[in-house]
Amino acid sequence: MPKTIFMISIKNVRKAFGEKKVLNGLDLEIPRGETLVIMGRSGCGKSVLLKIIAGLLPVDTGQVWVDGTEITKLKRKPLNEIRRKIGMLFQSAALFDSMTVAENIAFMLDQHTDLSQQEVRKIVDEKLKLVDLQGVQELRPAQLSGGMRKRVGLARALAFNPEIILYDEPTTGLDPVTCTEINELMRDLNQKLEVTSVVVTHDMHSAFSVGTLMVMLYEGKQIAYGTPDDLINEDNPVLQQFILFGAPDQILNIDNPTLKQFTGRNTE
Amino acid sequence: MHNPSPESAPSNGLAFLMKNRVYHALSEIGDAFRLLAETIFQIFRPPLQFDLLMKQLLFIGFNSLSVVLVSGFFTGMVLGIQGYVQLKPYAVEGSVAQFVSISVVKELGPMITAFVLSGRIGASITAELSTMKVTEQIDALEVMGTNPVKYLVVPRFLACSIMLPILTIFSTFAGIFGGYVAVVSLFSFNGDFYILQVQKHLYVGSVLISLIKATSFGMAIAAVGCYKGFSISTAGGAEGVGTATTGSAVISLVTILVLDFVLNHILFNILGLK
Ligand SMILES: Nc1ncnc2c1ncn2[C@@H]1O[C@H](COP(=O)(O)OP(=O)(O)OP(=O)(O)O)[C@@H](O)[C@H]1O
Ligand SMILES: [Mg+2]
Image (cartoon, rainbow over all chains, first blue to last red; front, side):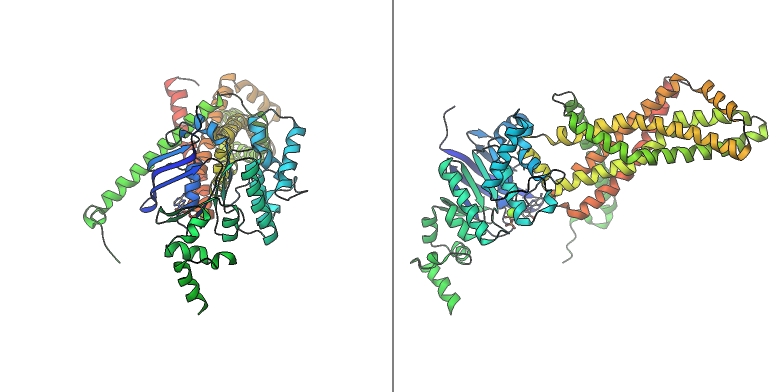
């Protein structure tokens, strides 16, 4: 099967919970090897979108293509084949609280491979090192801090060397130093291993440091899509307001009239 | 802000509500049976993870054995007293051992065990699975390519179906022993005669009936427990977990009673067993 340009394509997807419309005919394409940052107000459906991409939530209408396969009508077995290429970091980390940290990270290896105990152990240690955690192998998730749980969740998402990684707020709740490390890790994975990533984040430092593409969701649709440079120069009040309130300093110096208008109003 | 929609108009409001409730209940029963069918299908699809099954078997055994023994023992004592007192006026109090053992083996042993396990195990299954659901652990399983029914439901279902008959044997013996203690200590009944009577009236057929009932109750407890755990909405939160857990215990009690009636009807009335 020839490889498609787009690793993930969302076509006219609608999703409502009861009366509440969350996605409203969303179109979105993510080329292979890119890191797409999804921005949008709290409750606008970012986590829902990630779950739709992972095949965890059914769509009302529309199509979702992952690595050349339309997944919305797939049966469990072929869907699971595709899911093995996906690593997902949940907003809540979603660690199995009946298992130790090591068992959490080893879960996919235990379930889907015949690797020996030592080999699995080695991978677990290696992934924990990646997220800058050590000596927590035998702890339970309840014994970890929020930021540590998030990093274990990330280590678990990386354990099976996924081609696609879905990150739901990877740096929320982390201290600035760890934040920077996680950002670097995400960039490394993207550049060295050529994984395709989707990152939901409210953290503009993180967004601009890892994103090669960005999209802004508003009322269930995308209102802006492009490279970080494109977005900074876009003339859209909703977008600029969003970027501005969490933006690193260098962005504020860009010569953009809409942005200026907000900055001006802010400093007066 | 009151804007009554046509459905909630008083004229047909109640009918609408009832129709809605019946529809809801039926669709829930349908969903529960779908989960049961999927579970049975998954049992026969290798690989079966024995470590998961073992863990559940031990969990159920350790958690329930003492309660099952105590409940069985006291039920037997009560039966002993009742049996002796009721039979005495007809001068047939000698049959008290037969009365106790038949009641315990065919009816009360499986029933008491099932009641204990629906409160302890059924409810804890629901609490565990619904917590996993609201904390997105079930989603995490799915996204890692593991079928939650196979991974979570199958071991619990099998463990309940296996442990219930085993625990029923314990509660049955405890019950017969309870009857013995009661009549021997309170009414100076001849202990050797009691044991002789029990041996005489304990048929393989009765034991089989007891085990068939117990296995069915075990399946029902696990099915209800797992269904109630899985059917909670992700948006339910801690409150949803609480509601689901109490709901699970009540529903499995009712299910056991109904199932017991159906099984009695089939085994004794239709098949004519004794
Ligand atoms: N399982 C569900 N059942 C009902 N409603 C849901 C469910 N999941 C999400 N929603 C609703 O969908 C909307 C979008 O939720 P979502 O979690 O995707 O928001 P979000 O953009 O990730 O927000 P945040 O930035 O706060 O994480 C919310 O209004 C939420 O109430
Ligand atoms: Mg979210």
